[in-house]
Image (cartoon, rainbow, N blue to C red; front, side):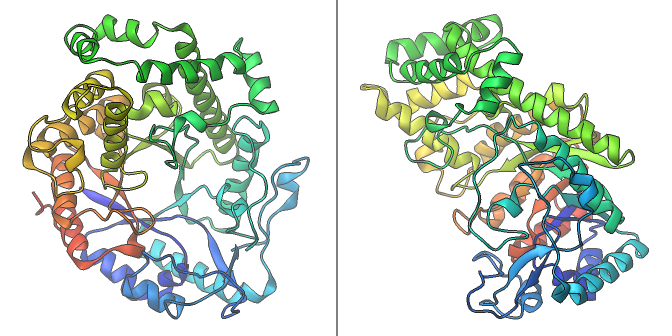
Length: 462
């Protein structure tokens, strides 16, 4: 089971032959670059930090120069402005002359990697250079609507420009778009504060015969349903409404809720399919993969993996099981404990049984309830939750040949998953025939995590 090792800037680590030797020693044959960026104004105290708090791999520290190194991320090539003519909302990041040495070194590193037999991937960076990152070093500009038709054209043009300057890449990973999927008030991904009301979304909704006002009403009505659960209602739901036609009837019982869910799926499907078409038209030989959350949350974030497999080459559902922001255990913990809090008389176990039934999310109900997710996982949890969500991922994307899940152990240096938990997740993936996965990221790998990755890569991990 081979990992595609993802590396984010500073990309100077790729100049280190020891990095490629480390990959080869671990049986790793593919490397993905998260953002194609180099750093300007190195050492300028007014510049942002190059490293994130979780970037602790010794090679990453050496590549940056020190833990406190500073610099402004900029593009690694001068953009071909003709590719972007007529675009009003998007513009590609530039490359100042001062970084030409770094760019030359990056080209040489990737040339050597290709000659050594490595396959290289790139991640679409369109969102990141607008968020105060690549190409600006300034505060983020206003967000661009998910329904802005210019976005998919920009992505295709940007990927074409990347390949014209760096012809090393064989595949591209699209990160999003996603709608939200959490319900805990104040959480980063709270579905009930998501904005649908902008001109582009209204125009898109109208074009498919839908109404943004009805979408918002459906979202609000869904919250009313979640705050009116009783023990008797939950017991009836679990026994009689959790599968097949009965589950469909429950989810569509309120037509405005159905409208809200259908709209999110229509937006994501339109956005992703349009982007893939734009990339394929400009870069016919490039493989394109899309990412999403676990199957249980696709109804919330708008992804339909069965539809997406009709126009993608592979998919990357996220085996992100840590207990912190964007981790699955954190999300489920928020759903279950928030529902129990919102509904007087409902216990955590009853809320967990409702969540399990409503979202087709297998889970143990003794010994490892969501309130215990901050502790190391139990054997039963791997054999129920991880096993079944992985099974659903593989079935939804069309089999193991099209399955390249993201695997990670943390986000933003919080909620680190224990090394034994990573091993258990890899073991479940391996048992179901997984051939490849994308590990996020090399920058923060500790030896105990790399040990499991290498063991499975060499066929000795289970």
